[in-house]
Length: 232
Image (cartoon, rainbow, N blue to C red):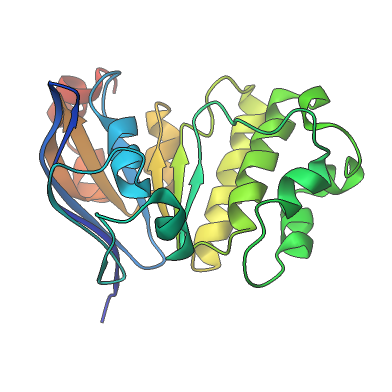
């Protein structure tokens, strides 16, 4: 029987007086990738911020493996097993690669696993993160999140601004993490990459869920994709 790794149930979220998320409901099964899609401004990053606790939900419930986390601090939510690869990477530029990883360590030591996933990071262990290429910084951001031993990994636009060869490498990394049993929420503007990886899809339109269900059902629905994502 499938285990629910993450569930959002009727989530409302506001920035000041601006009502951004309206009764957002979707769920992620353990070991699956859920692609969270939508046009710019649809509410995808706001969803991620609500899950990780940066923007507490005004209404509704968020559960991680059945445990309510919606009223906890970001630090407490991270301790419950939620990791974040933020949009824009946000590595610590003056720290070395190894220091960026060690500072995020929690629980079982994942350093060898991260270096196995990303051999280039191992080669640059003592290099300052600010001197890495964009692709290497993205690898470091993913590795840093994995150092916390997340049960649910949130990835916000991991392919943004990267060359096609690096995007393909990021895609292979996500596929490997999924094969290892990692549960992943993937926010992605690269719709092809998202559909190639996803088991489930949630599509947002102006802060509301326009579709939530199997990736195969969304992938084959040309009108749904054209209407809400503007591509096909």
